[in-house]
Length: 128
Image 1 (cartoon, rainbow, N blue to C red):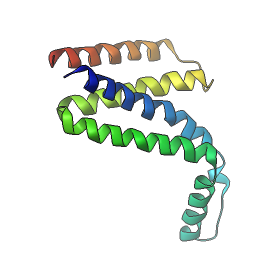
Image 2: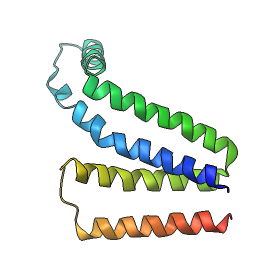
Image 3: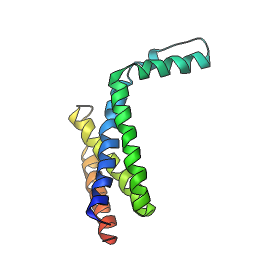
Image 4: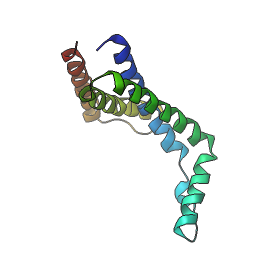
């Protein structure tokens, strides 16, 4: 695995993880949308979300991470791409949530982040 692929995996984790808390924040209030039937409910929720830039912009950025993911998947072994990108997504989601003041992380969360980084390091170094 070369440096470009490592950067691509970091970028995927950063994009996905960094936008998850923003998507959550942008979707606040969707549960208050109430319609009489199921189909109307879905349509109004869709319209509610996609007309809010606070939801739409992070979602589109998140989807661009999928483009990078699939490109990286074509270049790197799937046994590395999936666990590394998912692990880094967790890590960056936790960090972004902390930056946005969502909640104070517990010591176990920090320990989990250390294990994630150690696991990613082992996976990457095993393919060098």
